[in-house]
Length: 315
Image 1 (cartoon, rainbow, N blue to C red):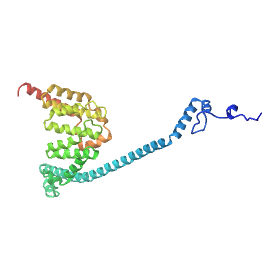
Image 2 (image 1 turned 60 degrees about the horizontal axis):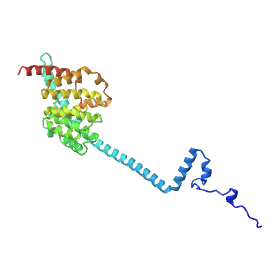
Image 3 (image 1 turned 180 degrees about the horizontal axis):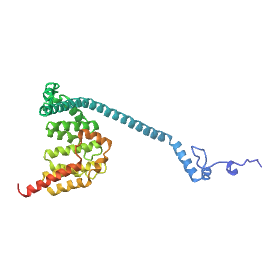
Image 4 (image 1 turned 90 degrees about the vertical axis):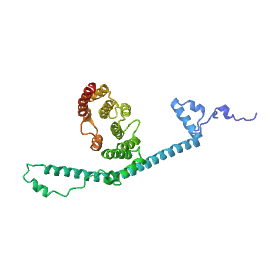
């Protein structure tokens, strides 16, 4: 009988079944591992078997992330450039505005000296008075030159960016000063957000509502302000919106609704005004009110009751 060497199948040394690409082990050996090790082994095996797809996906994710970072940097860079443009215009505006304010104060002081009959040296003061500073003429183009046009150009190109919105607030103040309320309304309208998110958005809405009140657009004020009243984003603004809403109801001669708005503001008192964030206090220098909302509400309520009495009397 010929000598026959047992084959591997008989002696049990041949490994049958699937062999993993990653670890080179058979199904039999794989079965000996615990569940976590099995999943880990099979996952690695799939990655090795589909390495081209995996590398492609990794490349796409990396490229997308890089693109997003680049886009963010470009966007921030563009906004910073616009912001720098705004600051240059604002610098010129503040200089002109400050000179006009100084001239007005000087004129008031000189007028007070001239009418002070009790001062012994009044005549001497009048003789030694400083050279009067140039006051605003009342002509917008003559007083501010290219400043208004530069603000308007920046705003028209970027009405929804922060520098453009702040430019809208400054323009609105200038237009108010020169009694150009239609222009103020148009500028603010372009920067008005349907759902305000930032403090600047709320300041835009507040100024827009004040402008619409002066233009007699009472229904628009009520509709827009009611959509934001009660918001928890900037709760201290709610009192101002209630005030404006009350004035709008007055304009429509809906006295009871107006009285309700004023009473709500008075009931809250000045406490909400004391919790304004630092940026609100900073913006108040340009765009805020001199009186608290509660003080204004008390004044408006008193005047409202006089109007109601006169209206009921038919006068």
